[in-house]
Image 1 (tube, rainbow, N blue to C red):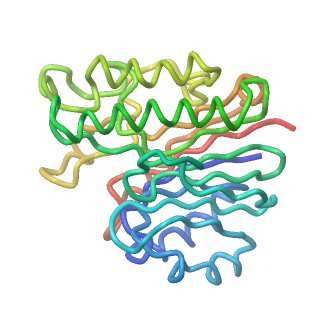
Image 2 (image 1 turned 60 degrees about the horizontal axis):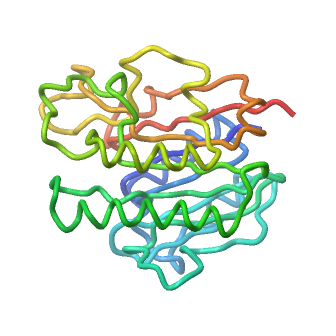
Image 3 (image 1 turned 180 degrees about the vertical axis):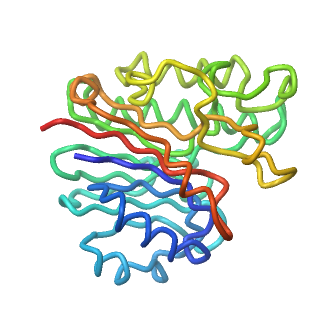
Length: 256
């Protein structure tokens, strides 16, 4: 099974690129973030023509997530399933080919110490609570998406240049480690230990071509899935060309 995640930064603007990528990469499941499209306007027919069912969660403004799958799409749940503040269409879950898949778009945080930063940490805490309520670490579970956190300094281009910014602070990284403590493993890191393997590059100042990026798009897998990892890739080619997303798609392959 090939599971992918991709922050497309507007599905309407990027639909042609998504269709092209899905056609050649042949993922079984794709978690999408920042779709910026309402559920009623989601391009389900276009994806169905490629063999994929869709479970979108968006209101047509900012944020928005989705799961598209060609191996089944059952028991769809949108949001935390509680009164917790989702901060706007940031979580959708479904069972795909026997795996409980979650597409997540973690809040950015904006400014360290500000109200949005504190809301980001609260959201991550609620995500862990949601997993504790809805899954077991021994289950086949995948939590995939744009986490807006670089797990460690291997995942950023320059600590000094980014000092004082969100995405790299100890509280954010600790919140990520708490998800791992629950029972999740960074699937990409199982296979690649080196630094400078980024998934996001700012549009400004030619950062992609200068390779000034971060690895913030993650596929966190329960151990039963992590043991099946055979291959992983950040597809930098999908970040090239005209009007790309500022993120590249990432996928892992799982043995049967």
